[in-house]
Image (tube, rainbow, N blue to C red; front, top):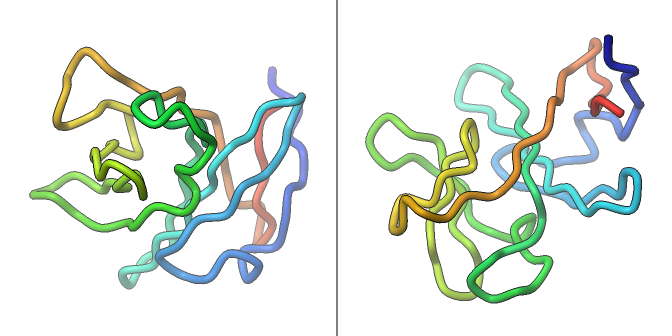
Length: 109
């Protein structure tokens, strides 16, 4: 059973953007998607293409039925539910368990 750690209030992450959090020495990009329904995703902040911690600064949107973030440097799209790179199926970024407890964003420790 996971221990859930409070990270921030949902309002600390403007809708349809991301923010970076540090948990156990790992940078985690947390995204707040609000397209009529509040959703939250957590993935590694590390972009394997640019080798920089920048994913939280990416642009979120949809490609077909997939909710994605575009890496801000080279623009590869990562699916927020799986971490899969849509341009290169051999590349993924780590995803993390995340949830809302009321309006509090929590990550599994």
